[in-house]
Image (cartoon, rainbow, N blue to C red; front, side, top):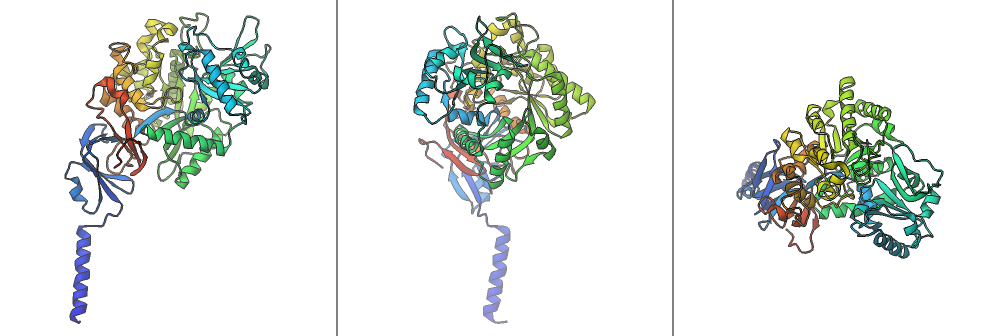
Length: 561
């Protein structure tokens, strides 16, 4: 062998040895100089100063020396910013928020007249629309607290149908053109689980409650895939700007389900979605038969169905065990019959799907618990991590049943601060003892999971985090908090918006924290939420949002990493 050949051989062997001890890491990055917080797989909070990422997943977290373990990695200076896992909003309505972002928003307006005028202005700017749609009105905020009328809308818009959903989605306000399109008149009967409000002469006023809303919604042309995709694009950008990297979509129809699967499979979905298939969808049977849906990048997962027991408190639709205090002749509405509930529970559990059941009133919650107990005793399925969405007003004696049945209370903190101005008026002080009872659930070791219920509430998770810790609105009212004994700590709150929210979607192995092997979904904040005064939590701004190790949002004012 020549000297040259021997040299070449030795060089090759040396290169191989070096390669074995110092592997190339072309897709690795290390973010240094950060104030990091996350929950480990045991749900314990831990801190770190550096984060290593490869191919979209977490390699390791550690102290300032971590970067030395990855000498070939791209180093990024985190500039001392606070870094936490991406927020998981455990209850929202994706398409509804998308359509809200693309339609007229009347949230927060002080009178029905103001709402009608804003809708009329919008209609003038959108002459091509056949229907004028919007959302957000709330008569509780108005001086007279009275439901609005079709006549008011008619005085400003009478050439096209108008349909405006109440802020909670459990009532709708129509003008006369919309009522005519739906065939609603003095002779129209209210459907089961719904109510057509009427004047003293028996004529429809223009407000429809719960199941009666379908009389109008069924005559509105269904959105096609293009419109759904447009709404999804708008809502994805909005959620990412707020630090939400994953959301549980509480009511996905078949068209949305198919589109979400296509977008996830192609890698085009921008935000992670955990889908709850709507129990009222005509294709529910086929979707259940097809089984769980999950793509390789965990962008869209569907293994849950959404069922309703009752309506909402603000529109007197929540089902109560005793009548409303401010409406003694009325105890709310049941939206799904006992027979239907039993059939749906049977279908879902036998298909291996989680049940996420909407229940706001104490009767609605009791019915949900009763149905879970019956199902577990007859067909099983306890291990599927079933949930009660809202768990809002619960009879105190029913709270322990959540733990006994392993049912997850899926709650939304801002509902308490939004409802505190009317909740006692609706149900009285005694029933408030089991209402918005986050601390009571945690004290019995139930896994509380949190969301916003967007677009019923604003999607900003720091509004909910502030509400959970302080029991106050953003004006830090009332002093000391509303029913302050039900407040929870910042650590408990963040657990409910991250690792426990992931667990409630069977995703704790891949999402909800920054442990090795999980997706590198995280956000950088302008302040340390674990160190600041609780009253300032709502002021937190998201500087950057990262999904699977890629930056997908940067605030205009932020100096990007």
